Amino acid sequence: NRDKAKVQSALNAIISIASSGQGNLLAASIDAMRARATVGEVSSAMEKVFGRHRAETQMVSGVYAAAYDSAEGWEKLKGEIAAFAESEGRRPRVMVAKLGQDGHDRGAKVVATAFADLGFDVDIGPLFQTPEECARQAIENDVHAVGISTLAAGHKTLVPAIIQALRDQGGGDIVVFVGGVIPQQDYGFLYDAGVKGIYGPGTPIPACAKDVLEQIKASLTA
View 1: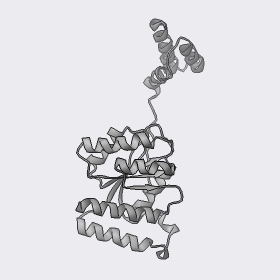
View 2 (view 1 turned 90 degrees about the horizontal axis):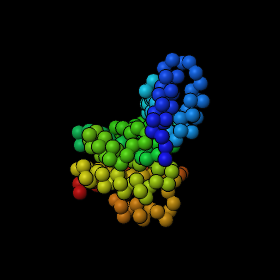
View 3 (view 1 turned 30 degrees about the horizontal axis):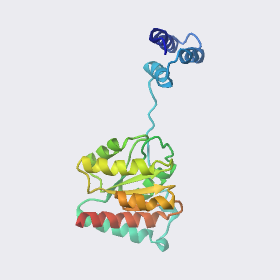
View 4 (view 1 turned 60 degrees about the vertical axis):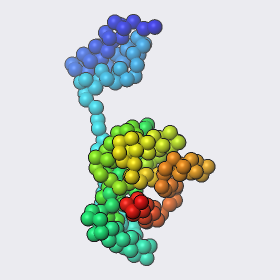
């Protein structure tokens, strides 16, 4: 058991030191934890003064396209995407997302940038979204597909959850594809859950993008 009054006093001390700049913030944090304050409570106390950093996820256009030439089918695929846009009245739109506590976002940024260079409209979700938050953003942005980047072994929990969240919120027609480090023996489980494509390490970006485009086309004619 912990003494709530003692914990609150220790947290107030953190706020006071953070506000005034007078005193040892680390020592005050240790004192609070010795009083059984949680890491979240200590962080929240500091946040009252310092605020919380929010990273902005951005793409850099043109870099990925520069590494490809027409011999690799890049220009042909761009033409197919342009034809889709002309036929449907808008470009194919995908959302690239990270779910749960998986903060490994470099691969997701590479995929998002490459898809944008090909002509997709691309949205990137913020880190640490819940499946419900991701589904809501995907539906609000009217995307054709959601790509889940998974590098922290959460795919058997979070991927079925995002598929269910999309269905619950009226976005059951949105294509879900997955990329990252996924054991081969889990592929069947994910396909059975409703995933339309799985792209592991070493998958060429144009091959992935071509498959996603075909899955989007199929979903629109289903």
